[in-house]
Image (cartoon, rainbow, N blue to C red; front, side, top):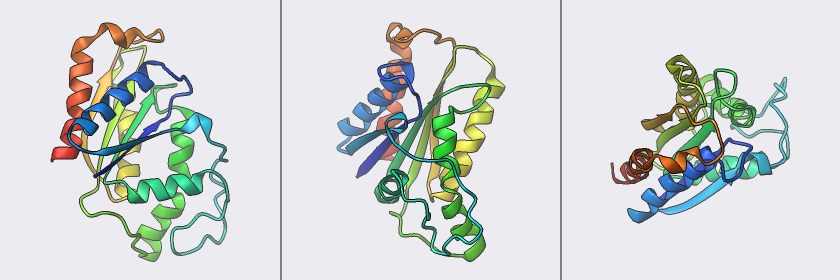
Length: 189
């Protein structure tokens, strides 16, 4: 069982990163092999909306996203973690998702079926300084489209409001328990 954690926060060691690490610990406690990607550490461009992309779902832009595609394809579980920025996902997370347009096109326009493990699952962790539910809902709707595109069933989410400062989540043991269980559940179910 392979679990891929994708961190869309630019802040290493921040609330989003801490929670993703805890979810991956939960997954590992259930026997999964876990890996984490920090999107902010990668070098990739935004989607270029190519006029004639390949029908097989491959992107013509050769950058660090090529490795991300492979890791998402090989994962049994993908856990995406993103802070809320301006009522939605971080730019890093949204830019990565936009680059999966080639996969969306292949799946829904050309009918190409990419090899992906059966029963792929996806979970979402989101952190916000504010407490507006509609911001989390907006972010989750984009994540759900991403998971549908990569063939993952949306199995869980954890929305953490009111976490303004780096490390605020360390004061919230109930959130730690919930995110650990989210990681476990993603592997077990």
